[in-house]
Image: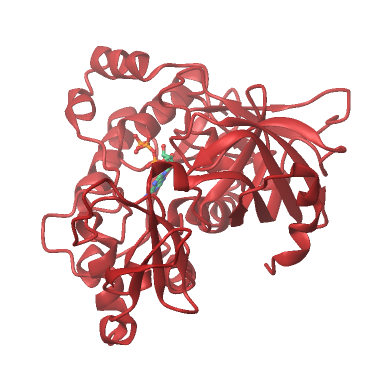
Length: 387
Ligand SMILES: Nc1ncnc2c1ncn2[C@@H]1O[C@H](COP(=O)(O)OP(=O)(O)OP(=O)(O)O)[C@@H](O)[C@H]1O
């Protein structure tokens, strides 16, 4: 009988989840390792050797740790659960003129559910991952009893942003053993324990089903005929609407994009808006990217079950965003965000995450952003958005 009970550890084969498994094993948990196969790289046109979390090499790396320490390891094939839901959402968002974040979607709608279902079957009370973030149950105050995610101590590695969508029930069964550690400490630990290959392994930042980070190529292969259908739209100038030239089709651009516009403008120009209805891509200078607020919907609130009155937060609009002070107010399943200063390149389709200090209050998907000369008029903004 183990000291702490049985725990299912999500092992990608990378250094972080491997060390999470090692630490929990040493703490006295009865660890069961599980590596999820989400996607067949070759089926999305991958030609290079597959290196991501679902590759054979990664599965073997996870298995080696398990064999080494003497705990069981399973491979979980979730290609079906993952496939249509995540990929259709990904392509659908680009067709809507938005910029999706499939990793957050997969985390919250696929990985946690898939893991917890298997945890039940394997009689595991908890699951664990190698995310750099903390999790705690709040005692007292407005958030009494709620499970709260907060930033990992390693500010450069902090992954609290990607966990905003995990439900309270799922959080109540999740352990994040790396939240109090720095990446350098994890590397030292791996070296000390002789897992050198984990230290030298390069990290993959690719979306698992998009080979070479070429999302445009992926869209073209996935939706035959798309290129011809959306070709011939115009680049138009922010403010004046002046036609600047032809683009390749609105789904092939993202807000904030500067490179790859295929034209020279004499000064740096950025994509400031994507208009699906008219197949127009709006271009402007860097200050044209600034927005004063946004509407966020399809919320998942973690620290509180609703936003208590207008609330001061630091709001992130993308993973590597440092965050901007913002007041948020909730109406039903939408939150209106008013920033204290302009925020650049807000892309509808990305996730917004609200922080109170280091705690994740919750998050949602960005529906639209706006400029607001008079912030008080912003109360009408929610009514103008359909989720
Ligand atoms: N294919 C997978 N199978 C099992 N668990 C996974 C898989 N992909 C990700 N995870 C879990 O999600 C966590 C975060 O994954 P992500 O790829 O975002 O981060 P990472 O910092 O590169 O982690 P790692 O070094 O463990 O790969 C991992 O630590 C792991 O626990």
